Image (tube, rainbow, N blue to C red; front, side, top):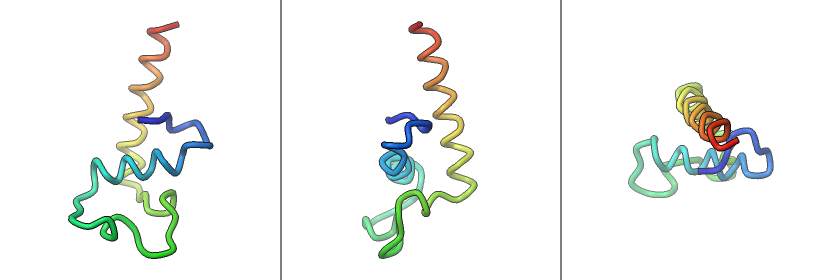
Length: 64
């Protein structure tokens, strides 16, 4: 899972979080036509994303 704070992969990060945590049957259930991945993340997903970012930060500091 990419880091939340790397802007060049933020859209990919949002897409992966939605794939993991939002109920869906078809890819079109994840976002509306013309909507960016960054735009689909509501406050509930931001909470989960913060927790994943904390996980990354802990692993990075451990490896340093």
